[in-house]
Amino acid sequence: MSTKKILNFINGEFTEGTSGKTFEDRNPVDNSLVGTVYEAGEADVDTAVKAAKAALKGPWGKMTLQQRVDMLYKVADRINERFDEFLEAECADTGKPYSLASHIDIPRGAANFKVFADVVKNVPEEAFRLDTPDGKGALNVGQRSPKGVIAVISPWNLPLLLMTWKVGPALACGNTVVVKPSEETPQTTALLGDVMRECGMPEGVFNVIHGFGPNSAGAFLTAHPGVDAITFTGETRTGEIITQAAAIGLRDVSMECGGKNAAIVFADCDMDKAIEGTMRSAFANCGQVCLGTERVYVERPIFDEFVSRLAEAAKGLKLGAPQDKATSMGPLISLEHREKVLSYYKLAVEEGATVVTGGGIPDMPGDMAEGAWIEPTIWTGLADDARVVKEEIFGPCCHIRPFDTEDEVIELANDNVYGLATAIWTENSSRAIRVSEQIEVGLAWVNSWFLRDLRTSFGGAKQSGMGREGGVHSLEFYTEMKNICIKL
Ligand code: NAD
Image 1 (cartoon, helix red, strand yellow):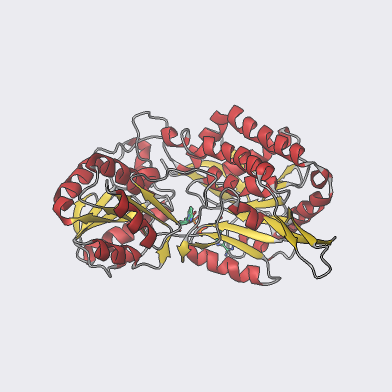
Image 2 (image 1 turned 60 degrees about the vertical axis):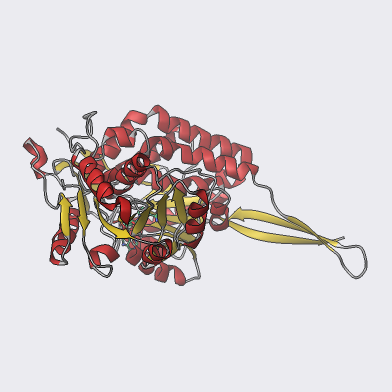
């Protein structure tokens, strides 16, 4: 099978760039070569940022709001028309099942353009009437303008979805973007360049540069003085480094970072729903979801039943090729990431865990034996200060611990440096509200998980991030608010 050439997209053109460097894009299903990625050098990043800067003053900057909205609708429609290409590319890069990516990644990736076009079109601007000593008053009118060139740095777990979650609002607000997709998943971002070109997006509005973080495209981009703001999704440690880069020139940052999310299961829950929801939150996307559950707290009377039912369900997961309709779990993103996850599987045993199910590498047939497969894993019996209970693993695994009281479980859930999301399972709505209010997170789900109304805020507390995205909250980051005070 021939492999693809995955190019940078700068100022409306696909280009190999000038670094002379390439790297491999491998499929984690069988470690086969998908394509050769052309790494952007410092000069290419500079060209991309300058093109994005120039585009702010070109036809893009002169478009009416309605023209911009129409353009973003066209982009979303075109992604949907090329759905199968996006699907194939995303699944080749990530190994995730087609059933998952066709349901979540690609449709949501397209929808982000329409959702934010609608938000920007419909949000009112503020106006305040001020009394003045002469009795004539003054009128204050708020006006939002684009912030400028936005650097978008995205991760590999939901490549198209998380990238358009930033590019959608950035463009809707009239900015231009330079996107650095994860080195693990370069394809769908590059493909979006082609869609932009087909839709007649003016040159320089959407740029893609490929590469890594330190001493590569990521660092070159975040350090570039022409970048006006940086939006990032990825690990907290990387977020800290990028925030330091952004401090030079006081550039604004939006940070969506790691999590070690707790699920809280009360004895009065609907057990079927709690099992189904926790199955998804722990194992969907092979556990590589920032909002996923890695700590499960279960009220003691139902602890044994919950553990055995979740373990049964986990054993029923079908690991297999993305195209296979029966597949419910794919591999991890890479062999390198599998090393990391396996090191935690080993550590769990060293820390005294009981391995309820999983804990190793599954036997996969044929070429898949070369892939980054791992078993879905459940532990019990770890101490609250075990590293496996404290640190983000980002794999298909969770630790289950019993609790006795509401106060105790709130304290346990909050005893972590992260604060991204939680899922609370109870049929008692007063308790659901009481507990949700006390959990230190940006997103609390009650009797659900991953249910998202895109008009609502999204983001993490504590070390899970800075700022909020979603709906009007995205406008805070992607626009510069100006107050115009008119003395009457
Ligand atoms: P990562 O931090 O390793 O990489 C993310 C991106 O940053 C990549 O594009 C990478 O090339 C780039 N990068 C790395 N170092 C850089 C540097 N010094 N300067 C500029 N760019 C740099 O994260 P990952 O492994 O791709 O993703 C997994 C992590 O993302 C997990 O911690 C997960 O929780 C988090 N995540 C968070 C959310 C959220 O919404 N909060 C969503 C998805 C993933």
